[in-house]
Amino acid sequence: MMKKKNRAFLKWAGGKYSLVENIQAKLPAANRLIEPFVGAGSVFLNTHYPRYLLNDINPDLIGLYKFLQQAPDTLILDAERYFNAKYNCESAYYGLREEFNGTQDPYHRALLFLYLNRHGYNGLCRYSLSGKFNVPFGRYKKPYFPAEEMLVFAEKSQNAVFTCLPFEKIFSRARKGNVIYCDPPYAPISKTAAFTSYAARSFGMDSQSKLATLAIRASHKRGIPVLISNHDLPVTRKLYHCASISSLSVKRSISQNGAMRKPASEILAYFAPNDIHK
Image 1: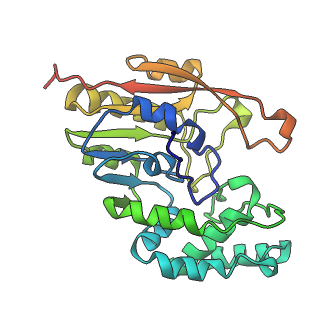
Image 2: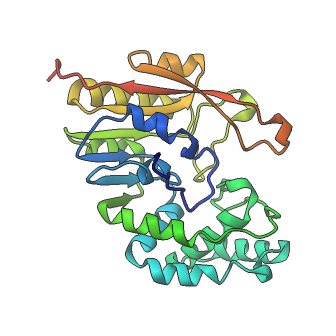
């Protein structure tokens, strides 16, 4: 009987829940899994490593994860208050979004980040250039409160360390015996499809190139295997030229028009460890 997969408690555009089996099959055994772009954490939740280093450049996401790790029962109780009819309307949503953008209190931001994630449009996480969360109201009949999924995440996170650092710094923390899985902001399919405002800073082609260089360096010079997900494009195949590449077809869920949600080609690029340079 196939083991049930763990779902992330956040809705997440580009989440890896549907690809977990493909990713699992490519990840080798290791004493620690490192994720420089953890996102909603589907890979973390569905792998079984002794330890994890989970990083993301978004401080709101990492702040929420740390509070959940440290005090799950309190966080769940406090967050559930926002999941009722009173707060599931346009005026309440935009009022709380404004509150979120105006507060510096880390715990209050964590509660509101979860609320905005579940009530906002389609699991998007997007900020303006000035750092303001600007995802519109989602208009869901009854947003789901993920108490059970939060408890699973909290329990599993006892073996994890959370950081909010640039991805380059996370590569420098990797050691022999670790494995790195990268799910970066994807290279755009077209010029109009670029989505770079995830954390009020861009992830352009310079960053894509730097990530590929770090993967080559980690695997070939330090003996640390690296697996990267991305769109299957000529530019990504060129960047990952020395990796073992697998192609996948993935259903897209961002397009507003359901009929336009066509499968997109993605790749898993595996940079195998190579000790000949040591």
